Length: 365
Image (cartoon, rainbow, N blue to C red; front, side):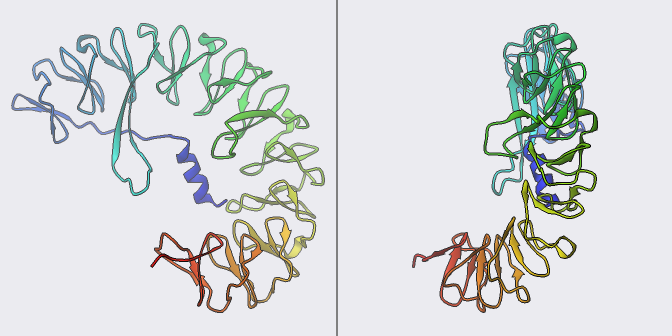
């Protein structure tokens, strides 16, 4: 996985930016948000609360949008996302949807149902709490001790009793000593935890204890790689053959490969046939040494080392064969085989056929 993928994954967690520069203005007896005329706003009582929230004697506003049901006289801004009146709490955001071909920003306005407005307070990282529960954006969730709850980042939090991941307590964790090591690892005085969300796995988000890990010496050495004084780890897998003192991720770009002084790994798999001194990475999942071409941890049988080269989207070829995800693409002509651009129904072609994701396809006439 390359650095670009990591950055996109982080964006995929939903950390959305709001507009910091105010667009409210009053002129000629009228109220505007940027170029939008707020026809229902009362000029005489209108007041800007911060860059995005405002009120008049009747209602509150977010980026010029009327917050229906709000009480303007009691309406206050808590930060750039949260606002409240004497009865209701609102969570608002201005975001990019990231859907295909979507480039415009959208406004999201939500009531924080169940929130106690009188005791509601913003904490950090889009978290808040009242005297009953904690909240992430507009979602309320139960915590063991509201008074001591605090977020540690966008995914983790803790109170005096336990640590939390994805708004749920981590069973058996110790809140007093709980801390975040990285986006996937956390620890307390008793244990180390591996956690994942839908960017890391097809499983629902969750947490597992790494039973063999020692909290005091646990150190992250890559996106999913870590070590302690005895072991090396990939996620919550122990790499039993690894030398922890020399173990590290291959580099910042290729996050699925790692090595120690004598071995090479793909994720949690030891590449047993690899010659470590001559081993090099060709792409996210292809590699080679002076004898062999590999796909992930597996040698590609009979690949021609001298002519083997990468294409795109999992394709590669040598003088004799074409490969897709490490397997021979039977019947493909290596001489004429090339990638196809800007076509939705194919990604590659040779002189006789078209291909999509490693499968031969017949195009409709």
